[in-house]
Amino acid sequence: MSSADCIPVITVDGPSGSGKGTVALAVAQALGWNFLDSGALYRVVGLLSLRNPGVPPAQLADAIDLHFDKAADGTPRVWLGSEDVSLSIRSEAVSQAASRVAADPAVRAALVKAQRDFRQAPGLVADGRDMGTVIFSDAGLKIFLTASVEERARRRHKQLIEKGQSANLDDLLRDIGDRDRRDRERSAAPLRAAEDALVIDSTAVDVDSVVQQILSQRALVASG
Ligand code: C5P
Image (cartoon, rainbow, N blue to C red; front, side):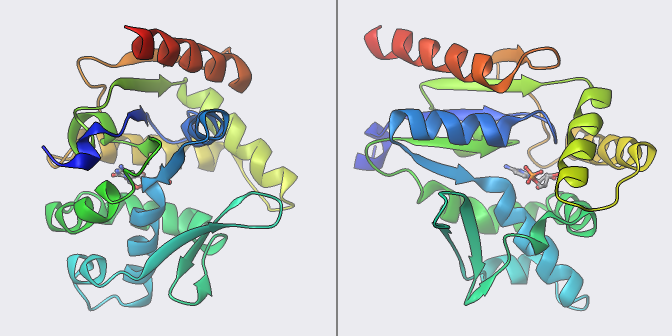
């Protein structure tokens, strides 16, 4: 057991658009802990694979030069070398590319260490698909956040419209459905709730209530 294994971790897994990113970041901020958006790593490999179609994605993942920081308003930023890719990795094309490269076991293996390196004091909240099942399987608290596919498409639609981007609800429903299927059906670390995860359905619940529910569970685990 290394000293990092003593550092507490909360994992927040779930399908695209379940709100896990927003929830996980809010929990990390409330506790003053570090935050890992593991999807950003797969998104950057997806972006690189679109830019370098002839190169095996695992090779791109191996050489990835990625770091995170925060903009002046506190929003997380993602850097690929000296390029700010925070916006470009959120496009639908990159979302689809990310879910394709994420099905490759060699890509997943190349990203394990980079993810575990985020486990630093005083604690880590990790958001993804396999945080509780694979990367931090010893986490003290595991959350699996779900929401209906219609609600997730509606949320994504609202987000895009608010950003001034064009969006079509039917296209989003189809894209989210495709990504769900790929994430759940792949053989390498498929999306599923860990056996010891607390499953929360956020379809009809707002972010604040989910965050409060997680913080009260955390208090129970910490005092147990
Ligand atoms: O969470 P986000 O939507 O940003 O993730 C983008 C894609 O990366 C997902 O659709 C999924 O295929 C993949 N992913 C993964 N394992 C993770 C995080 C993301 O396979 N831990």
